[in-house]
Length: 180
Image 1: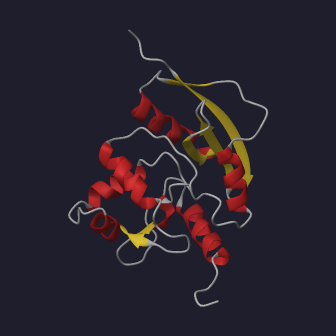
Image 2 (image 1 turned 120 degrees about the vertical axis):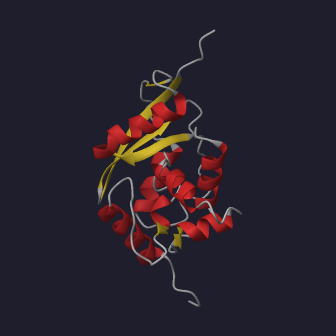
């Protein structure tokens, strides 16, 4: 018996750093978020997670998804808009563990791969954490842009370092100062 094909709805959202592609499943859960010029990367990740031919883009629906609405609010400065947004991703159990930990990294902060590995109880797994970070299919919502090098430098980001810097600056500009 052949597995059912995962049907995804595609939406696009203009942002200051390019067109954001949002893919949701029939239940409205986010399956992928990436930048339009990185569509080949997103396609590779979807094929890796669901199998080549295991997913397809279906018909759009007339109303915006919760992901579209939340990302719109986030880009407008509402840093809490992505909190609690439901995602459903493929990936290994380890990858999903890293992605869940990424969602706990507070807005306006950064952490190193080593710190993230330690936080999930696997301090020696820095490279594996880096690989999981790079395979994150739900950019921005699962904030892989908040992971930096141990020396504080910006390191790889699937959407490009310029976008990573913009996202970090955007968040820093919209997070209230402590004690205020």
